[in-house]
Image (tube, rainbow, N blue to C red; front, top):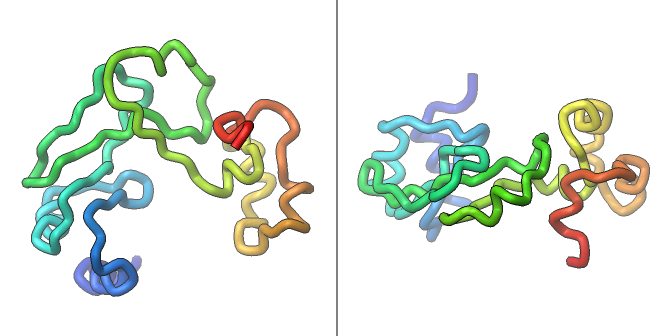
Length: 140
C-alpha cells in the first residue's frame, strides 16, 4: 500500500531538502498532493504527459508552474515531425531504458529483472541491438 503521504514526502525532502520541482512515478497527480508540494516550497511540477501534443506551454495549477511532458520515450514510434512543432519539448527518459537501448515493453519484460544488478558486465547482454531509446543518446 505504500507509506502515508506526509511520511513519504518527509523522506523525499530529507534526501533533497532544496527541491524546487517534482514529478511523481507514473505521472500520478492530485490537487491535494500539488497543494502539499507547494506548501513545502515546490515551484514546478511535470506530472502530466501529453504524448507528442504540439504547442505545450507552462500551466499554473494549484499555484505551481506546470511543465507538461511532451513525450515518454519508452514505447512509441518516433515521430520526428512532432519535434518540429511549436512549444516546449520536455521528455521523460528512464535511465534503464536508455542504458539498454530498450525499444519497448516486450524487450523491457525480458530484461527488467536486471534493474537491481545492471552494471558494466551485465549491460551488454541486456542491450537491444536495433533502434530503441538509445537513439536519443547516440553521440553523447
